[in-house]
Image (cartoon, rainbow, N blue to C red; front, side, top):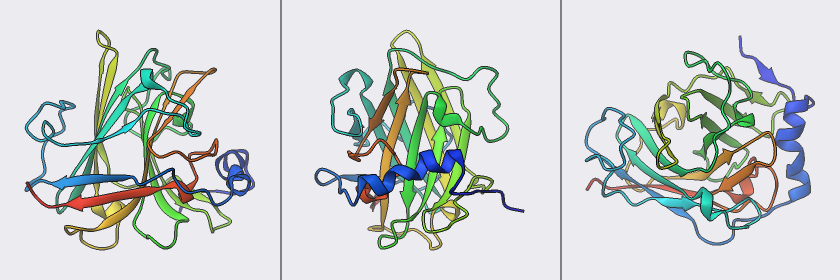
Length: 241
């Protein structure tokens, strides 16, 4: 049995209510993250200098949803893909960590967005912007994945299971935390991936709490809500090196 979040709930109002106010706002300029194909799947290491990540060019999230610079929260995101999985690597500079006490790592954590977290929002349908998946991972390795459809009154399916794998690491000496995510394609798309495929994408991070908090984005949303699909840009599957 699927558990859905009604759009009239407190969570859903916070999640979606701002969309109508924000209107149809496009991101401020072109945005493309090219995911580079690798021949075979690899073990997660959280090492950006490993052979699988060292020469992969990423994108930068370093401003708030309205475009205000947040250089101290500079976050690099890289991506790779295989025939079976899509990978993301987050390299996040931080000043302070706001972590949930007694983390649970063997099941989803509801309300993870109230703490420090990396987030991937990705949709396979370039025309229907209301459909996309959301993936969140904390520095401690907690996670949640969500199946989002704005057009449904029953809202968000949070018991949907993507089958993701993840690994995180906190470098407290240099104040950087690393997050590596492996998402099976069956959790994103209904078709087998191929070179040149495009997906709708935005990338986010939250730092600090309970207040003030930093909301860090790749593509400007011009809305307080990350759930502004009009602002999503593109992930493009690149050919194998």
